[in-house]
Amino acid sequence: MIYTVTFNPSLDYYVNVNNIQSGIVNRTTAERIAVGGKGLNVSLALKELGRDSLALGFVAGFTGKYICERARELGLNCEFIEVAGQSRINVKIRSGNETDINGSGAEIYQKDVDVLVKKLNSVLKNGDWLIVSGSVPPTLDCTVYAHILDKLKRIDGVNVVVDAHVKLLTETLKFKPFLIKPNVYEICEIFNLKAVPDVEGIIECARQLQQTGAKNVIVSMGSSGAVMVTEKQQSLFVRAPHGNIVNSVGAGDSLIAGFIHEYLNTGNYFSALNYGVAVGSACAFTENFATKEQIEQVVSLMLQ
Image 1 (cartoon, rainbow, N blue to C red):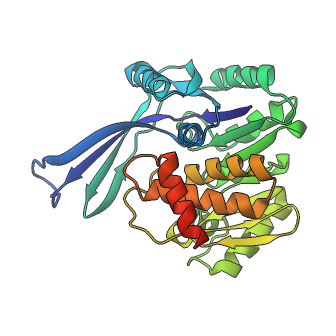
Image 2: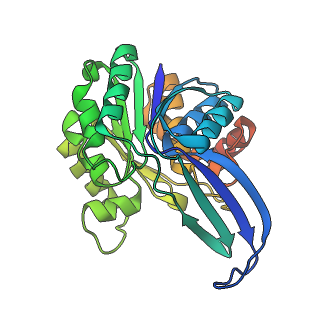
């Protein structure tokens, strides 16, 4: 079974505005609302690929209720824990470029995290997958993901995947997750780099994270593709296909979903990375999450 955990799910309000200006009333030319949050995004992409998952995490208030309703309408299995406050609303403004205004999220405390840990310990079995990803509200600190892994009774038999910002990620390395997926900008922040390194430099950074505890490391590089260092001592690089970037939200989460899907099919790291890059690229080339047909079109492009 595949479980995704989203501490900070959201309603994402996308608006297009022609030549947005500060200090005056601006009107949208297009708008839409979608459920978001990195773990939920992974579950949505897995669903499109034909794999079920159970989405776990926290919701609050009327926004949280709508997130649950919409997730179920989209065919997801979800069991969210209700907490205080309001689930966040993120505003995604497109006016020449993309500008994001992200809310802070619900009020989650240690007692709520303990409920999640109890749930995970009741369901996780050897061979299961646990994807923990995304931000956490300001009521929690950067050790919360590490705390969860520390409290899991069957962690040795579970394939843990962590995709989170800097310290949320690095604090989990001592628990030897199966896979971590920082992006290239997070790599720069982790290693205090002033400029984005070349592919060889990124691979070297990934190796250092591997030596610190992660079994496998994927570094997503946006339109440049992704690199991976594996527990089999492989260093892999897959270029992203050329295409028109429409919406980058969820591309990294789709990469994870594609990787897991193909790895479960083949057990081959290069095939899984290649497919993951294809799924992530297909997401970036579409307004919403890519359909299976759109994904296969991108896969065929990468084979040419």
